[in-house]
Length: 295
Image 1: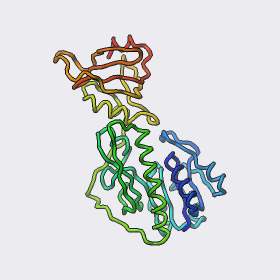
Image 2 (image 1 turned 135 degrees about the vertical axis):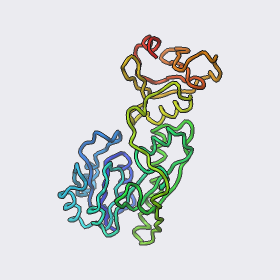
Image 3 (image 1 turned 135 degrees about the horizontal axis):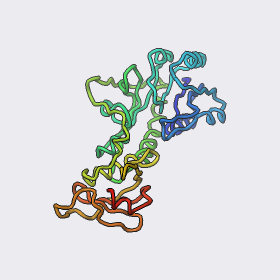
Image 4 (image 1 turned 60 degrees about the vertical axis):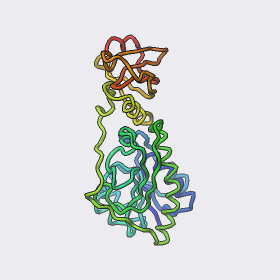
């Protein structure tokens, strides 16, 4: 089974490594030279060079030149893991076995953008990985492999990413064997089932201290590195917040407003929230007096 691999993020690299470890027949790689939209961007061309695999950079996976290059490699199947661009019909129809995609959520629920981030922000207790056959929709094709993982209160962006990768490393060899043998069950998705998550905007990362302590913790943990970070707006400027902890103030007088500075200990700032308090532990506020004036 000849595979053409498409990807350009950290997960793509880990998935490609696993395929190479199990001696999958990778006949070509499509990747990007740079990306302004992927915080976990990785150029896969060094791996192609190391293993002697033909590799092509592209800015548009659906352009005429890229399609022609893919056709020449005569792959049986395409695997597209970590590519922020919709695969169009012409490309979907090239490989006889189709195009396998990946989405870190339990489809048909939570299709769309930023699934790990939204899952943490919304306080979900479970998510998972779905490998599926791509069609012209967004995350709507037949499911090939799906497994779940638990989201704990203290999970953050990095730990969820690690859980996603670790689970995928189990799924990929199993899926490869099923596809290669021709014995791979397919489970159709119902288009009307599930939901779609929208693209996150910068305003979605703004900390509003009228939120509950738990929601603020979820927000910061969801957006911490390698992502852009949650942020505060103070005096017209934005300051990133990378780590928070729940405060001990579970009960405060009714006349203490959200956003009130309760304590400053070293670089840590305790702030009143909608239902208690939260400590800002790792942040980019240099002038702590500024916080007292504007927060």
